[in-house]
Each structure stands twice: as C-alpha cells, then as structure tokens.
Length: 230
Image (cartoon, rainbow, N blue to C red):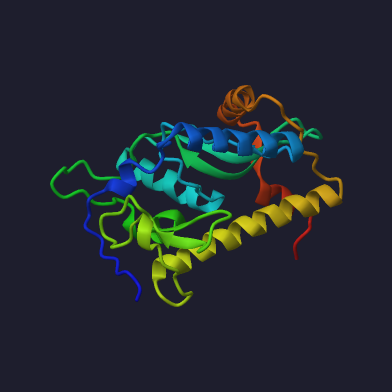
C-alpha cells in the first residue's frame, strides 16, 4: 500500500532542503562534483548552506519577473554549467538560489505560504517525491517531509500514475536529459567545448562573476543559435 501525502504547510521544504547531513554525504558529493568537472567539464555548484533547488532557464525568467513585482530580493546562481573554451563564456544548464530559505515564502510564521504557487518550479511541484541515484526504488518520499508516512525502514516504490508530484519529478528528469542531449549535440558538432576543470570552487567564483557581468548564455540559446532545432 502506498503512503499518502498531505501538505501540512510546515514550510520545511522551503527552508531546509539544502543542508548536508553528514561528513560522508559531503565527501561523496565532493567526489561526484570533482569527477564531473575533471572528466566532462560539467561544473556542479552545490554549496551545503543553501536550498540548492534546481531551476530551469524558463522557470528562472518567470521567478525574476515575480520577484520584481513583489520587490523580493532574488539571487540566482548557476547550479550546473560549463565554461566554453570556444567563447570563454559560461553556459548555464540550470540554476539554483543563493538563499538559505526560499525568498518567495511568505513571512507569516503561523501560516507560511508560497507567494508564487501558481508558477512554482517543477522541483517544488515534485516535492515530497525525490529521486535517489543508484538506489532502488528510484523515486521515494523525502524523509524531511512531515506530510508523508514514509521513513527509512519502509521506503516504498511509487507507481507512475500515483501522484502529480511524481509526474513532476519525472518531468524534471526528462528536462535534464534534454539539456544533456543539447550539450552532447553541440559537442559532437564541435560548436561548444567544455573546459575540463580541476578546482571547482575557484571556477564557481569565476562563473558567478561572469554571470554578474552578463558573460554567459543558456544552453537553449546556444542550441537555437546554432540552428540545431527546427
């Protein structure tokens, strides 16, 4: 029998999803990041003190607009990107927030609500369904969510038709695969060349500076520019 999910509006998912919970977890994450940067030139910027919610480029544009409408300080930073050796610019696949708590969460402690609920990103729509890499089952209910009955001892497999949250999680995987496919096609045609990295922390600082000065592009922009889609 599947566990049921009912949002309790505790805002835990908006304030505490980015913290590394153990030294082992931090070490494993660092190893993964280093390998991606060294072997594929993919820079994965995952500080352990922020929310670290992936935002796609179109989602970022919508959130920027809403932030302006509500006078909200919104600090996006690249989450997954490359440095293109051809242009020497940052090419962003997706973003995250440089915030400990989501800036779009209302400040009412007794009744916190999402200010951008109608346009919230896929990652928020998916929660509490999360994906586990190299673990079966692949999709489970998050342990930090108080609205589920799951725990470490009875993680149960979710069926594809079970929840709208799971559908959003699947959509995230599909969109990430599309971004990787764009990158691969650009590389095959030698229209982009990711620079292999050895010091990811220094690269992240450099990338953020380039973002501030506008020396970046999204992977979709380059893909369209190279006329690889109809």
